[in-house]
Length: 273
Ligand SMILES: C[S@@+](CC[C@H](N)C(=O)[O-])C[C@H]1O[C@@H](n2cnc3c(N)ncnc32)[C@H](O)[C@@H]1O
Ligand code: SF4
Image (cartoon, rainbow, N blue to C red; front, side):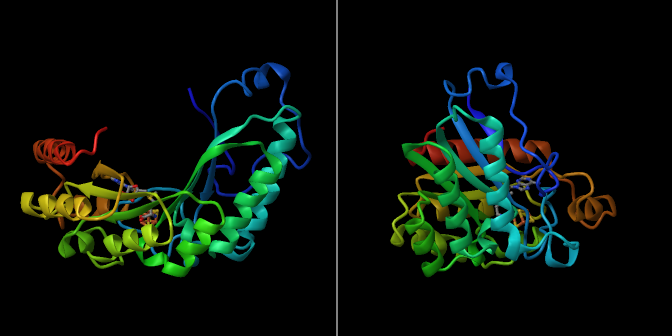
């Protein structure tokens, strides 16, 4: 089993009481003998996609006390507190995952500073995998190069679809080609591991659209693909549009067919589970 330490609370703000509290020995038992992962949540997005219910905030939604410019410093303070709480025999980190939201809305220097602090505070495996999620429109060749130089080894980009009308229904801000272009930029920056996320079953998506999305990721320089069935989450703009009858509910049989197409196409291309 992989132990994952969530760095920040669900609110996206430092959790718990002010002073460092050591965990009781019983809670720390086994910490140093099981794989230990660090998850850093960056809860900012430029805009909210209609289907998404992740813990994330746009600039308009941010209240006082939570701003992007101070976020890396806050995360580092929380890391220090986590190390005090878990110590003195700290577990060795085998994976770091910086997720969102859109972590790459923060400057690459800030993400590199958080990673450097984690390295200072915790032992890390020599071959630690360090991933950041990224939106295609939020990275540049220069920012990707800085992330690589700062110790990130893997980038996971949200592509969702190669069809323009599907991206529009999902409220995505990038063009169909931008995600693949960003994957190329990540490889050019030295990332060996690049993932593209796809979503299938969006209203209006056809079998041909889905096949084209799979073809596009297979023609890109990725070593991993995440294909998600669209989930209509309560409270999202997508759910409201469906309940008003503006968009159809994804059909379970269509979702099952798309899943089978993805499984067969990716497997044939040599991408195994
Ligand atoms: C938390 S997002 C972070 C990635 C990045 N912010 C982006 O959107 O490009 C991770 C992935 O979750 C998936 N996802 C989010 N909400 C979903 C939903 N309601 N149904 C299916 N997939 C979803 C999308 O594929 C998205 O790329
Ligand atoms: S899918 Fe990604 S960009 Fe869209 S709102 Fe969710 S976290 Fe933000």
